[in-house]
Image (cartoon, rainbow, N blue to C red; front, side, top):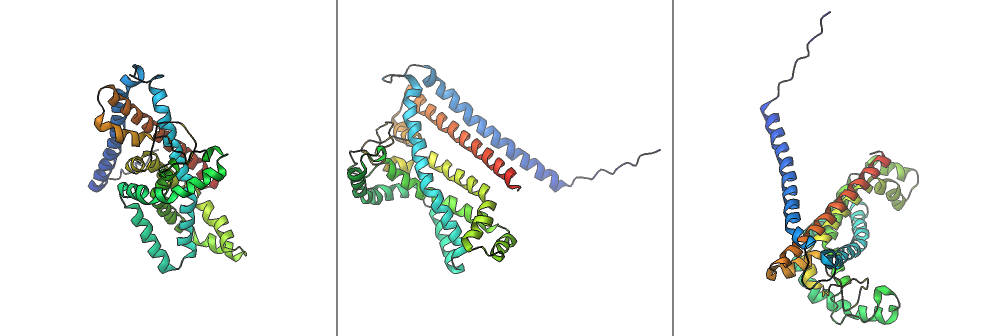
Length: 307
């Protein structure tokens, strides 16, 4: 009994070229990431294992307040930005008239293209003086809460002001991605919910938000990545002193890793350079950890949702 030989499909030149180019691009990304990690580790080792002049407790005692400020400011920014971004995206896709939705979409995309230094100038010249009276009121009336512990900042350049600037900066990214995700909701699902007697908001709850859950998480993580690594805007707006404090309106505020590197690196020398690069390694690890957690959350959401 003879077995029929299956003919082998001949690969076309275009397929071979595309496979080679795409494989090479993927490998180059991994090589670049590995190169950055190796550089950071090699430069950070002297600061991590060696004594640091004028600093008690070593490298981690020095970098911990910066890490706290980075995470705290990014967390505050995301708390403010994500609900507003989702609301704007829902308004554009399901409530606004077509012409208004197009114009608003263009404005959102334009906000994403504004350089960070412009946001920093706006924050230090407009937002900080505008918010200072509100900080004074909050301190006088809610000072018994740790978040508004006195004394209030006299300039308005607090961690809350910096977080508001970060929220405005990440808002266009999250909004634009959520808008595209909501537009991909199957039309039949929306019409079925409305046909069963659901209101517009109930239809969004039953059809739109569940369908876009993983996309909302992914867009939020992208915004969080920018908030964690933002440099110039935070460096310009925040009046930092390198402390650990949850107070939002106080005179003394924690700094962030990226802003500290930007402010100190031009004049750094010797072991100080290794310290700053070591703090960059910590920020690099935080970013990888955040992205890993986000991928795990998205995978679980996708499995549970059946998509």
